[in-house]
Each structure stands twice: as structure tokens, then as C-alpha cells.
Length: 222
Image (tube, rainbow, N blue to C red):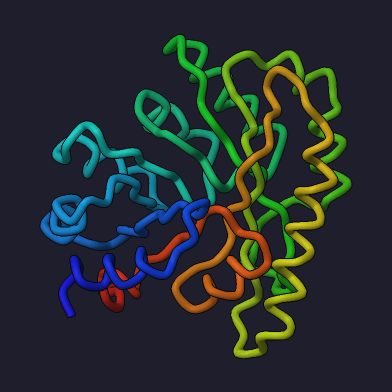
């Protein structure tokens, strides 16, 4: 099937309240353009330099989402154009995003990445840490970021029961954190679910899924 057909097939199954982020990391511009011409406007990248390079040559109505782990020293490169940063896992990173956004006189939307998987390799904050951050004076003083939701990655496993439990954990955390409403904290997005598990994620309350290989085919890391 073509990229266009893959996209259509997935979109046809999505509830109206679920946003599809097409994960275009490692994929060439011509593949992304095929998805763009099929109507897709939101693309996710996990390396800032790759996203910057693609942003420069792609249509300007694309919303670029940074879905990978973010190094503070690279925030400045994507600050002028990034639409949403999914993987915010520390106050230090939020401060840097706020600082770079302030220089550009813009506000950048962010998601707090919570650790829900049992694997050590997954980044993210503990629930208590996220709550403390959102209630802190330091956070409330930031005028150039808005935390609009949470993001999490389930354990890479065939065990649907475990995946469901981890996604449910994120949904529960979201509902609890949602009670915190400040000028720069307006939680509405739950970013969870990828090609292999997005159907479970949606059943558990996801409002944003990050799908790559089911749209573009398997990745080539060579």
C-alpha cells in the first residue's frame, strides 16, 4: 500500500478527538511530501537537526512536533518554529524552552513526559515530580511556555495487559494533574500510542497518537 493509502486507512479508524502525528524520523522529504499531499499536516521528529533541515525545505503550514528526548543545548535551533515538544522531562528543560521562546517573543506548547514503562531506557518524570513542578513558583513565573498535556511510552512488549495498565496509569495521572489550572498550565492532550499499540492507547483515553512505520513503512537506520 502507498503512504496515502496507509494514512487514509488509519484516519478512517480514528475517533474525531484523536490527533494523528505522522512520525517522519529517518524518512526522506519525498515520503513526507506524499503524506502532506494526502492531507497530513502534523509530523513528528526525534532529532532536532533533522527536523530543522526538513522544516527549511518543506511547506510552511506543517506543524512540527519534537517527539524525542531533548537536549537543552539544542532547544534554540527548533524554538523559532516547533509547534509542540512532547518529551519535556525536567524543570531545567522547561526553563531553557521558556528562555528561547522569550527571545523570539512566542509561546511554545509542551507536554510533560511521564515515566509509565518498566524499562529503564524510557525517559520521563515520576507523577509526584510532575505535580510538584506544575505547582512550583518557578514554573508559574514562565510566561513563554504552556504545558498542554502529558506524554508517555509503554513498555516494548507483546503483553497487551501490561501495555493497557501503563496507558491507564498515564490517563489517571493526567486526570489528577488536570485539576491544576494556571496561566501556563492547560492540560488537554494525552500523547500515547504508537504503530504497535495505538488502538489500546485510544481505548485507554489517548487524544494524540504517534504513528510512523504503519504510515511510511519500516525504518532504515543504516
